[in-house]
Length: 466
Image (cartoon, rainbow, N blue to C red; front, side, top):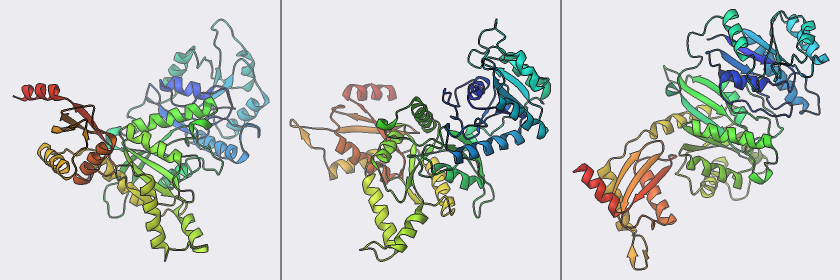
């Protein structure tokens, strides 16, 4: 493990902006509202050190609910204890506050000797309150501007002086891990699922909707029953996505952007539902976005234990037993998601751990499925059979025809269709072809895209292959 650096301090001193500056890219959400960062966000610095961005310590009740603040400080405590070096960030424009004094004493009691980073010194000609912070008693004190980059070189030089040089990547290359994103509405249990898999309280879990605001990446090595080698994953826990009409703050907007970026970066996406609430319009919109991004998609019905508990207390008429209830529930979800490519549906419980290994197997299967190559001859035979079974409707006396089809891409699957009228493939017939191809070649859960080319493109293609 490479040397690690934790960035700590009271709320709104610029910790996340400094984190992003050292990482060389925008990872943590930067916002003027205090208390935006809650979970510990981890990334590599440009030099290879492991950076940990933490939530503000000492938030007042008006900033965030008490239970979330307690969990945020627990997360910060974890980072402080794990880090090889602390960066204690303070606000150079405001000067020392009582909470800064309190934190300084806390770090001393823990045996920590942090580097005092006086941030927000945006004007190189102005010393701001830099000298006032010397009374905190830390010998290593550096002034920086995380926003403009002033003093960052001095800070990174200090890393090399006090820490061993990084030797290896802090995490395995993405090519060795299946990247999984958990998405869904607020409070459906995404963080709880990640915590259950990790078997530790690594992410903040609360009944307060919107607890997770950042996208948090975590590596998981899972030793499945009967397996000699661990399954290697990278988990992306994302913020709950609200309906667009309810995205009423810039913070909501940036959280949504981070979630959509996570979808783009992963191979497999799990859309998490609350079993007690079923499928909502927002869930359908999220599923559509995943398919548009060309990612493999599976459905996780979380809190299934609570749904069964409710059924046992008050059985619904028409269902003989729990098995019949589950079957009907599954059929209902399939009906709501009729537009999906026969995506796998798993019933799980983050609270009890029910069926957790099953859906990790689904993730492995989906990832492997996205690598399939479709035989050109088998593809064209299938399309011919489908046309014969159900020809397209005539439009103004002419029928849409496909002369030739070939797979041209993976991840997502893209099929090029050489046809007579490239703009005349209507949506119902497109879905008919998609479903048939996905069923024939075992591509359930994998999105399929068509690229259409007219007669001239077909002629040019034939000339190239001649």
